[in-house]
Amino acid sequence: MTRTPAIHDAVRHIITSHGGDFFGQDRHSASVLTDLGEALSWMYIVRDASADVLVAALRAAPTVAAEQSISPAAAGGCAALLLKAARDKAMPTKLAAAARLLADAATRAAAAGEPWTWALAAA
Image (tube, rainbow, N blue to C red):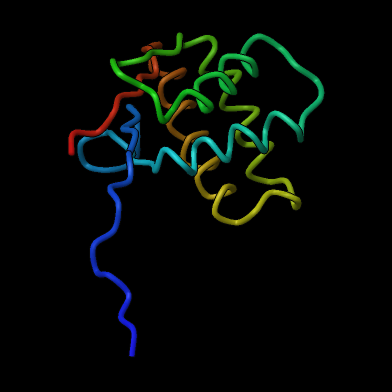
């Protein structure tokens, strides 16, 4: 009888500001954010500045070393794109849920006029 090991490799997580928890943060797996960035890059042909900022931030999620911030104006554009992606029928459920949470956080950041920040979670 074989046993599967109980120890798994550590998964990197990214903390985003303006989230829905008590501290105003959301925690996302870096691999989910990378997958979402890939899905957005091939799903939406029409590009604008906020779409490029968002896709670049999502693709760079596993390699975030320091805090990264997105301006309030770009966060508003990112929120619209993420909401569109979350509602798309072709988007896998796990990625659609992450897109919706990110869209809500980006909307809160844009409404508050504050930069939307991303940082690597402490292990």
